[in-house]
Amino acid sequence: MDWTTPLGWTLATLGHVLSVVLIVLVGLAFLIWADRKIWAGVQMRKGPNVVGPFGLLQSFADMIKFVLKEFIIPSSADKAVFLIAPLISTMLALGAWAVIPFAPHLAVSNVNVGVLYLFAVSSLGVYGIIMGGWASNSKYPFLGALRSAAQMVSYEVSLGFIIITVILLAGSMNLGEIVARQQGWFWSWNWLGGGLKNLPLAIVMIPMTVIFFISFLAETNRPPFDLPEAESEIVAGYQVEYSSTGYLLFMLAEYSNIVLMCAVISLLFLGGWSPGFPVDPDWFPVWTGWLFGNPITFNTLDTFYVLVMIAKIVFMFFMVAMAKAIVPRYRYDQLMRLGWKVFLPISLAAVAIVAGWRVFMGVA
Amino acid sequence: MLQAIAFYLMAGVTLLSALAVVGARNPVHSVLFLIAAFFSAAGLFVLLGAEFLAMLLVVVYVGAVAVLFLFVVMMLDIDFAKLKAGFAQYLPIGGLVAGVLAIEMVLVALTVAREGAAAGNALPDANAGGTSNIEAIGKVLYTDYAYYFEAAGLVLLVAMIGAIVLTMRHKAHVKRQDIGKQVARNTRTGMEVVQIKSGSGVEL
Image (cartoon, rainbow over all chains, first blue to last red; front, side, top):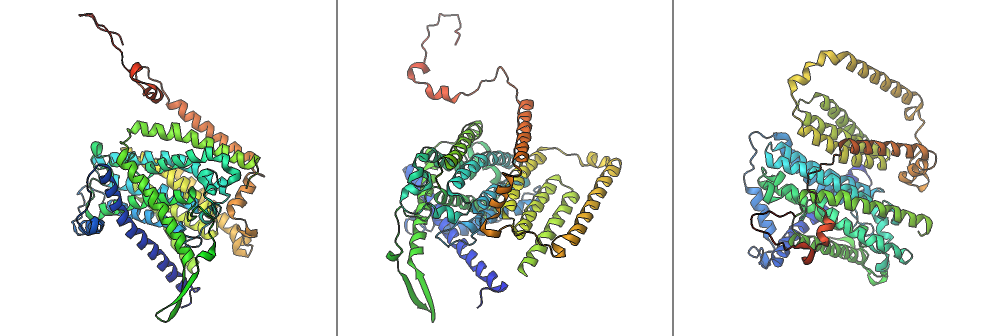
């Protein structure tokens, strides 16, 4: 098979995309289980423990249940938009994974504007919610949709500014290059300013990491900022009218976005696949073997990098799950105050400080 | 060949959804088609190699402007009969604007055909010399056009301040939350013991 022809390229890319989507989806199933287990642990419950060992297969059982149930379309709903909304949510949530590099060359698409692409796709995520809420033609979903529109637009602003500080530090919008800049010892990770020469910037970058974390909780409608689906106020917000697969897709998109943001915060601030110490490629020899008569190579170095990256994603997801278990829900006006009056000025000041440092201290 | 397929697909979607923006009966559907048009236009930018512009188009127009657009249109209670009543009245002005736009587009197309890429004068490669087109745009924007760039920023700032001034009202009787005050409160300052004479109220 010649992979350079249009057909070969299409097939190869398709295979690449499918493998990433499959890994992400299976990973999500276990992360959702982990989320419930952590939540239960904090509240001194057992959590899911019936299906499979330690309840590990709970998510798969849930999925089968969702798919087999009847999908109800409200009679006064806007049918087309109602059906498209969960699809758009899921497509965007999975599409964002295209630019995430798991190891130096392991990304489906290595685009120059990777960070901007992620920012663009995550800002589109709000459409699934707005469309679903509006098309349901019902009060609570509509309120949830309006809340989420205002919330996501507000927090995107500070997220954007924080991303700019990272871009200024790295001098590139390519995610691979941003991580390549953070190789070596852990003090070259961006949350400590990116390198010993930039260590004073840690005063700025540590708060930026924390604000990024909080803003991404708000951006992904995750507790304590899950006002679009606050069950004590508007039942389940934009999801009220959705049943079976529609609801499953919305939930999948939500969790996919959360895990994606965990990956982004690891790439931007926590060194991505860098383990925190200089890695000598000699430690990880390339294995060659035979599979169905074809020679295959197994790159242990890349495998190690992928494992480091996954460990960081899982650690960040643990933090997100703990935030859900520990922190009570924000009131809506407090949410807006936090976004516009606290995070926006602080991150704007951080952009000015980091830019000034890059220009006047002349550190690359 | 793949490029050609992608181009015709996205150009077709852009045109069809632009048509649907005007044709759709429901204004919310119109906005959704407008978003589709923006999105496929961004795809066309990517095909041109202008990935930075494409992403900006998505972030700014689709991610922010169109969300607020949708927000407003959803909240409006639109009366279609009333909306269509003035059709004949506005037809001459609308027709004039459409005509001018059509002539302009034909002129642009003619120029492109005679002197642009179609005549063999391809655009300079945006990614030439190893610089990404972000760098290329940045270098032009912050050197040759620095004043215009800052003037544009100033105009936006004035517009923003104008909007804030127009909508901000201080109501005297509304209780506002002062988070600093709440956090600074301790048991001693948070509680007050008052002796109340029977039959009289107390001012707090």
